[in-house]
Length: 140
Image (tube, rainbow, N blue to C red; front, top):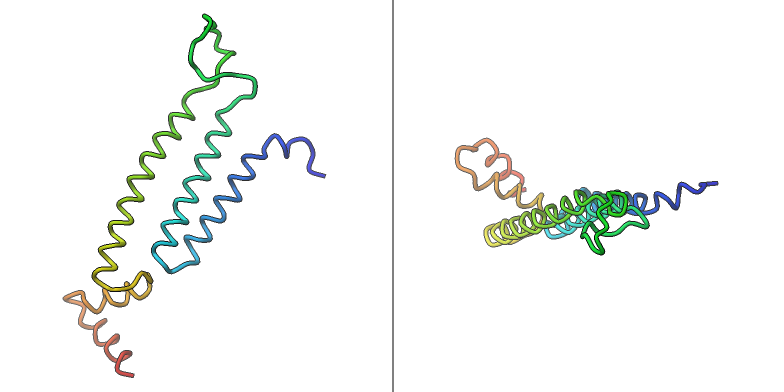
């Protein structure tokens, strides 16, 4: 039914499934920590996809041993470099997102993104029309 190409593209299929899990987590949850976890799951899927596309069965890492200098003996190092660079950037972005989440929690005492948005509109100076609407909703 699926043919031999299914096993050839197995890692690509797995990375699409993992990316879908991360994307739905990012979109459907209102908790900031869960959104960050979903973002990291998506990153992992992209790294798996890049690594699977860069690897060629039967070839070795591009480190010259035994004086074998033929290009056909080694894999392409660029996807591995992209994965390493992406991991470094992802860790930095995750640290920044967590730091901002901590600051938001200290200010608004919640991790719910909708509640933070509602409270930030209430706290923002110069938005008196929004404040009146929110105040009326709170009074009811």
